[in-house]
Amino acid sequence: MQAAAVKLPGVKPKSRTPAPAAPAKPAKLAKAPHFVRIIGGQWKRTRLAVADKPGLRPTPDRVRETLFNWLASLAGVGGGELPGWQCVDAFAGTGAIGLEAASRGAASVLLCEQDPTLVAQLQGLKAKLGADAVRVERGNGVTALERVPAGSLHAVFLDPPFENPALYEPALRAALRALRPEGVVYLEAARRWSDDEFAALGLSVFRYLKAGAVHAHLLQAAASPAA
Image 1 (cartoon, helix red, strand yellow):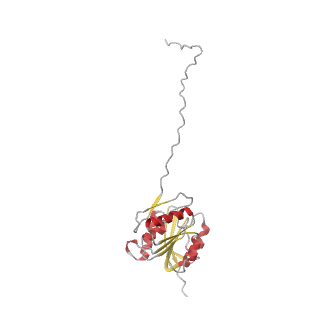
Image 2 (cartoon, rainbow, N blue to C red; image 1 turned 180 degrees about the horizontal axis):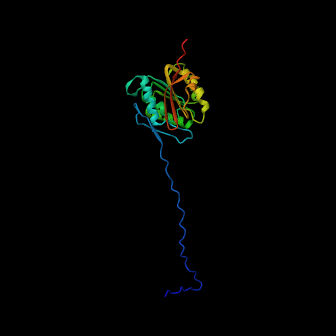
Image 3 (tube, rainbow, N blue to C red; image 1 turned 90 degrees about the vertical axis):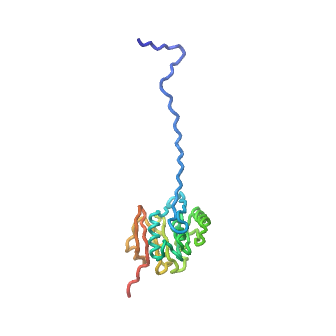
């Protein structure tokens, strides 16, 4: 026979309901550092930090590797080198493309960027690498190209912000003016541009690659129509 519970006067029975657990504090997750690497040349495997900035979108490693294979085939030199090349990276960002060109022997590379934090980062990288062939300039990439002597560049790298499509046409026009006859323009865009769009600007597609959201075009001056 089960004994009856005894109630003592003035004493409240203990509750059998467990006390609610204290809410757990959310764990603080450390943000993993984001880097890209130089793929070839004297600074091969050097890591370049990618700042946490809206719209900053460094060219993926696979795309850069393919691009520089294309360029090396045009240079006609073994080992992926670009000896003596004059280049402008007009929307430099992390500097991944321009520094890759300098790593592979380009004689002169202008890195142009508007964001002051990124400019300071690029200047730090130039000093760290001892990159005498690299010049860092804060300013508008299109304006920088317009100041370059006409017909002087082997390569112009254009990677404007995808959210600012108005930059593309003036940048392409300025790049074409600055190119040597055998020079090339590299363009990254959020879509594939048509042959007719490039032809209207005096350019033609030499190579094309799509990787994820990136449409990579390697362009040359369009051949002049026969008289």
